Length: 240
Image (cartoon, rainbow, N blue to C red; front, side, top):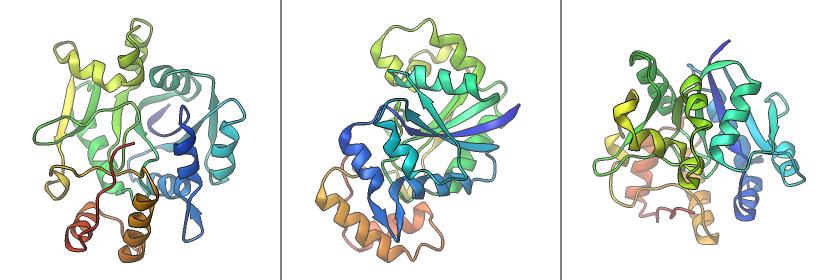
């Protein structure tokens, strides 16, 4: 059994999101940027990209590096997608990330996994901002979500609410008295109003290219990204 499986969510995407995944930076697609940063995590036992089973999923399959497995799913919501993937891969827990932002800091992933491991029988873990908890079914930007596989399977068959099925982390947070939840403070450098990472339009993409050119890409870390956004007066992209 794997300890923690990294899951890149390439399924249940809009046309805009699929087109964004195919955008290229230094010869690599946005999806490949996300995948490669996730494979750099020290505490993941493996990484898989999840794609839709229909023809739309072919876009994700073709963009995924050949050394990373792709799992095709017919799931219609995020909870079913996770349950389906966890049934295919024997793993104690999983770390879920979306594909909205190419400059992921692997140390944040490892920090979340380590915190969940230290919590006794942790069910769910996520980052928390000063005034809100970051939890969505398709995580944006730098922030992943950690789920214990057994806990997710236990609740998946009991939940009908479409909000919870598409945002499973929200279910755990709304029922904290019944689960062991580990919330980590978001790094101070990015815990500020309006700091979200994704691409919505061409202006956002221009900002990403500018940031890409300024990062030197040898080391991707949230403090460096935050400093560049602050000092270069770049507009932070809005949520999709």
